[in-house]
Length: 228
Image (cartoon, rainbow, N blue to C red; front, side, top):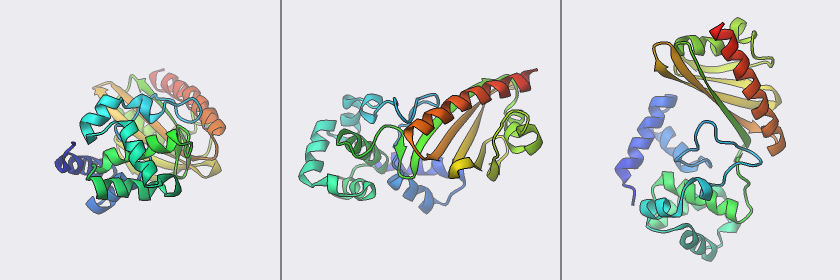
């Protein structure tokens, strides 16, 4: 079973990424309905997304938690988990079976998907879309394309209201339809970097697919702009 030390490392990794306190980061990992291990940056979300069971194999789950999906599902059915909230299910797995909080999320979302309580790509606050692009510029330049309003307007045709910004690392903003983006940047060398978009709080699976298509187009436009 994954050790508590591993979970603490996950909490600290989130603290480094988001700037949250240890308590806030720990609470997020326990209650966030999208579990780790996360899908790759280009993994589809919304309609057509892979289920947790497709993304994380039975042997991998059994190795980490001591039980496979069907065994966990049987235990959850006996507890009448379909009548419980996501947070209640995850907390029960942690409390009653000492499951690492990270893996409790994997089991919980897989169970909700299997029992028709959640569709792939659905989160507690709506649906999500993701996209990524590698661009032949330094990470700082790629970050500026999001953080600088004038430069951003040259490739992004929708309004974005900045929420937080960590130069060269992370940018978050509010978008139309009460949705939100979290953007991360990763250096791939002195003159190459990758941007990853996670667009959340989307109203429907169909709208998530539309946003995803838009992001693919916009990131291609961004690449052309910065590499020209």
